[in-house]
Every structure is written in C-alpha cells, then in structure tokens.
Length: 247
Ligand SMILES: [Zn+2]
Image 1 (spheres, rainbow, N blue to C red):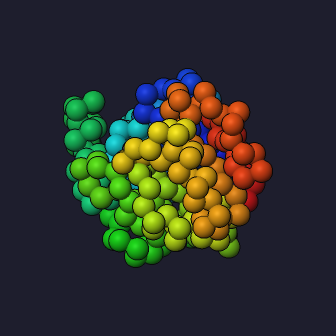
Image 2: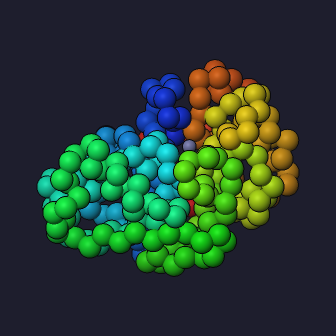
C-alpha cells in the first residue's frame, strides 16, 4: 500500500504547501483522506488520476479539509468524465455542507445528473464503517467546525493508518494511534498549546503512550515549519507535499 501526500499545509498556505489531502493506493481500492481546496491541483501535479478514487474520507467540515470537493466533483462531471461511483464519508451534515459550498462557488452545479453515482455517508461515533475494502472508525475530537470533528482510524490491506484530523489534545488519541502502522498527526504549532490544534511539544510529551509504529507530522503552520530542524527524527517523519510512504 502506498500513501502519497498531496497536501500537508495548514489552511493559510504556510511554507507554500497545499491544503490537507492524503492519497492511499491499496490492493483493492484507491481513496483520499480529506480533500482541501487545493487537492485537484496537487493531484495534477503528482499525476494522480481523480477517476481512480473510490472514496473520500473527510475528517471535519473546514474548507481546508473538504473544500476541494466542488472542484473534484465538477471535474468528474465535465473534464475527467467520471463513471466510477464515488462515496464521500464525513461528519453529520456533510452532504448539505458540500451542496452549500458547491452552489456558492458554481451556482447550478449540483442540480445536473453528474453521470456517476455519488453517495454521502455520515459517521457515528466509534462505529466502524465499511467502504469498499476499507474499514474506517471515527473518534470524535475537539475542533469546532459546525459538526462533530473526527480522528479517523483506517484498517486496509491488514494495516492501520490513523489520522488526528484537526484537534486540540484529547486522550482518545491514544486509542486512535495505538498500534497503528502509521499515525498521522496534525502539528500546527511548535510549542504554543492551543485548545483546537496540536503542537509538537504536546505530541512529543505523549509520544510513548501513542504506541504507533511510525508518526508523521502534518498541517504545520509557519511557527512549526521554522522549528522543523528541532524535530526528533528518531521519532517523527515530517510531511512534505509529494512525499510517498510504503506501508
Ligand atoms: Zn480545521
């Protein structure tokens, strides 16, 4: 299984990085974890085909995590001529929030038949959801976004990928990360602790209890990027747009 980082930036373009999106190619399926507004740009840059994507798993309803859906779906309809069904999973209300965003950006874009099946599925707290060979378990975290925000734990090809989404520290992250082959942690700040985002100091203080095999830091703001050289490389991988990891 191969994970490709399409975007690992914050919402504000820190370091010139694209917004959050991870591309996972497993034996059975190809999917995205989050779809920030710049996702299609990143996919073109990396020559990743949008028509291969079976599912998009959204952590929370902020634009830098789901705002790429309007472009992704309009591209599927008019440019890439998608035929493959698409499943989008997300917090309660994801379909309405997508429709609102798409209609604000491209009025009328959601009223035509897109030419492919589009299904939205909502998470229920810690209830595993099976989506075409992937089992995703959502854990509610702390990040106000108009709907419950989630960390997601994926079981696919016998491996576990876990992702914090955006969140302040919550102890459920121990459960999210435990035994994961790859734990992807947002790391917006270096040593400033915020209620709704993580920072390197907090992650590192909890590192031993996370129990993950590999930890990848992502969603870095300017302060964190400036402190990148102080990251303990025996513990962490630091994300870069375009980086790939084999699992
Ligand atoms: Zn957010």
